[in-house]
Length: 380
Image (cartoon, rainbow, N blue to C red):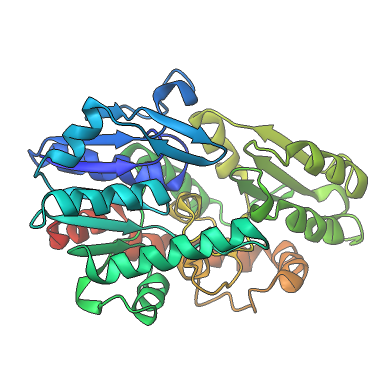
């Protein structure tokens, strides 16, 4: 039996939950029994799971103080901490860090591993001080308290090693797509190969939570700069924004002010509708400005479909590494986003070549069979 400890309820829509889901699926298929313990129960997500689930999920009773979730003494918690099965803990989350320490104290020889999804960038003020303290403790624990630390990109491997985590304990396992997603993306890629220079508007796509650090506002500004002022594009440019979140109303007001009629907000979509938007897109942009976003699974969806992706180059984030292509060299800074959008819009043949490179990179580094081999080599 293999146990995982996750903040959110998988499979969910976020990267951490999708990674936990993929791991549990793989372990189940290999003959192991997989169970996921979660601080967020099923009541906090839509009634229907977005993906089929064959493994066991157990919610932990907890108290909520804003974003901080504190587990309460309970039978599931005792089962989690008192057992001796291998335990894989997904960070960042202060409560999960504490539970991994308790599990080690109760059973010093138990196999405990961490999945380091992202570094956190502390904000100003008291909350930022607490975030910095948590991250310092997490790094110390990763350095001395567990047998293995799994992370998602070479950028994070280097950052963890520079922070004092021994290289011998670090393992690289990039994120992956579900088999059905991979098959759907392959069909889109096949169609794009037969029609490489897409006719119609230059369609830019964003998929993600509409939160402050995602910086969709920067994408809207850059898009408006080319779609409104460039007479060669005019109404032939569109920006499609998929997802929901606390910033949606403000972003809709911004879009209406700077590029009326050219930016469409779709909200959260079912998978078939999202795939249709991917098939029509010329480019995906993930404009997050903090290392809190370290790996966008949506980047893989685009690349698998033969669609180039853009992300900013940030310290302690692997986003730019995920989608880097030999045919696309740009500084990767927010100030350069409008210029690279301008060039991509004006050169459909170049975009088509970049799409083929994106598909090739996906197959070489991120394909499901590649991920499966890497997981087997980790011996978690």
